[in-house]
Image (cartoon, rainbow, N blue to C red):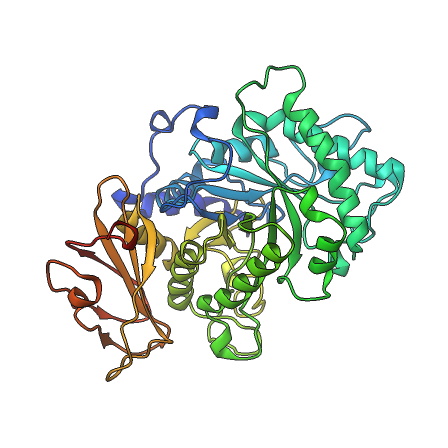
Length: 470
């Protein structure tokens, strides 16, 4: 009885919501329709590259009425992808039988939760894992037996067949280079992907005419951190990874870098350039790149040792990391994460579990998602640059307070309307700067001077002609 009040939290929160944040009526949510979720890689215009990883092991019911406000906010913020999964051990509890409803580890059922995203036009990236004791397989040991490989491949086939109408991208395993997720060798991981690839295609095509349909995309190696000479990612490339995936995926976290200057989103540029150069060296220039996790945990106060930051800094970083996706030319860019891994009241004590854009309150499967400032900041980014593609970076110089290595001015342009804007910010916190007149720098027809800080601002420009059109 003492905890019964917790179950009223969702209802009380909905009553307290502002009118603009109240859940949309069910009738306003479009019906499930595969055409809402096209296949292939997205066009690189805002917000098409934007995604987030969702936790399903944190006991959040994404399909519940009390989380409809948060789900609608997530949709309005412009997220087009969600990385999620239904673990092998939880969907196959009887050999050869696959269930996505009323699951033991996720009681609302994966089917209900997945459809809460699908009906909002959000395309899935399914992370396929982990072990299953029916096949003598734990999560922390690589799958190498014939029985285990066949069982895991059949699970991938079943998942693809059930949800193929929503054009999922299939990501095989999660961080296989870590001990908690198997400590795979490169050869073991590539063999796992090879076996699963054929099964995924079978599930996609079985029992239907696939003429004119785009084949599903398969990505990996899903390693924690990125590529470096001689590491597991590099060894996977040596073992033939690029022959069995359609894009490389990894988790390029910067939040725990030894230097605070390297924890910022812009630090992703150098490692991505190195990745692209390596792919080109191996004969695969322009090979698709997907970030399926990276982000920053929140904590008060900020602590250098854990890399945790406050809510406002997280909002700034989330916007800038999404902008970086367009600047560096990757194919999908997923924030880690949609929801915190621990409740809000645990934030001071568990510093590394609050990477979410939404905090959580309440108890298992009655938890309610509550937006952090990150959500409104990303929404503003989306609304300001919707339909625009990145064109070029402007060097604003080094006069006065300006620092060309720390100040950013990126031009975005709508290829249909020709309208253009600049996104302007600095990586220096706690300062306010004034840009030079952008008119002579960009050949504009009207003067543009921007006041800017470490939160990006989006300013229309007139008379801009893209370099290729000059």
